[in-house]
Structures are given as C-alpha cells and as structure tokens.
Image (tube, rainbow, N blue to C red; front, side, top):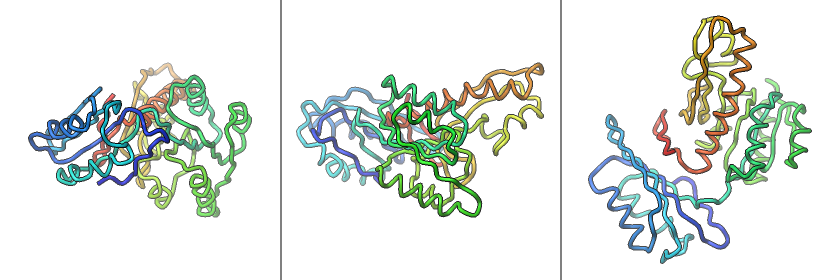
Length: 295
C-alpha cells in the first residue's frame, strides 16, 4: 500500500528513491531492477535486507532518471501493479526534493539550535516552514534565523483547542514532517493519527529504559553507568514508537545529576539531528514497532 503520494518537482527531474517492504520471496530484487532497467533507469544505490524471523523483505533503491522513458508524474501508477503483486508497502520519493518541516519546542533550545545550525550550512534537504512553541522563550532565536514563530499555549483544559490551532497551522504550511525538539507535551491520539510515521521525537533516555518525564533523575537514582538518548517516531503509546537512532555516553559515581543532564544534552541534539537526516533522506522503513535503517 502506498499511503503517501509522491510530490513531483516542476521540472520533473532528479534521482528517484524507492522504499519497499513485503513478504520475502525469490526474485524480488530482480523484478524491481528489471522494472527500472526496462524504463531506462540507471541504478545508483541498492540496499536490501530480509528479516530472518518474520521473513519480511526490505529494499531501498536509488536510480537516475536521465534516460528514463516515462515522466516522473506517471511513475507511481506505473509501479503500482508490481507492488500490488508483491502485496507491498511502498513509497517513491525524489532525491533532493526538500521536506517541509515544522519544529515544536518548549523552553529548551539545544536541539533547536543544532537543527537550525545544520540547516543554515545546507546539511539537511528541508524547508523549515515554521516553529511552534508552547512558551515564547525561543522567539528571538527563530527570528534570528528568519523562521515564523507561533506561540500556542497548552494546558490540560485547552489541549484540544490548542492542538486544533496547531493542526491548522500545519495544514496551512503544507507540512510533511514534524520534529519535537524537546517539546514537553504529550500529543493526543488524534494528532498522531494526522501524521502517522511523520512525527519525530527526541527522548532523553536510552529507550526502553527510563520512559516518562524525568529519565536523568531515574538514571541517577539507579546509579547507571551509561546514559543515552533516543529519537523515535511518535505513536499513541508514550515513548514506545519505532526507534530511528540512539547513542550513549558513559557516566560514573562521580557524576552529579547536573552532570548527567549536561552530558545528555550533547547526545540529544546529535541523535535528533541524525534521525532527521535519515528520515528526510528516506532511509527509514518502519516494521511494526521496529525500523530498518539504510544508512
């Protein structure tokens, strides 16, 4: 099933990326490669994996369309019969076509700073259309980078109304992906359903350990020797979504709670930035509660 339509640039040119998963069977790579070859495509990169337990096949393939014989606007409809035969989940994207991103923040600035800096040097193929915050603290930072900044206050009594305002802003700006850059609010199931597999969160713990709002204190009280950070897709279950990227750093009995927070901030900003790159370069395939990441 292809649930997201491919966006085609005005000039209809560029390399094509196919992400596909289906039940494993002989000849899948050959059939997909032949589809590309017989239409004049030249494969530039191909990576595939078979889950040995679930027998699910995953593939990411990129090809040049310099000699392609069909318009990109017709590519999805041309590939659909083959995908249907495979019973596949799939999507096709154009390499280099920028992903429209909204960043959600509260008061912490380190993850936002990292994304804005990397965006300013051209590291991400993204357009940051707007920043949405539930506090005004980071408005000057957004203004410095010339990005529209919207404050939508959230309380227990106004949560539904606030999310309605946020969803309207996202629709008005044609947002593809939402990044929760230490946004200290739990999104409702309705909100999550509006952007399935397109909301990226950073959690300040090496999940599945220490879920919830105070993982560094939990880690300090437990006396762990390693702390981590996890970036994952948001689902209805708090901090249980498919993991995109993780990293760790060693700590010791000499470290205070403040030391853990300081070390953790470095992990959070780097892990979230890496996850955003993987997502916007279309390198992640979701497999239930897990992911396959072709990096």
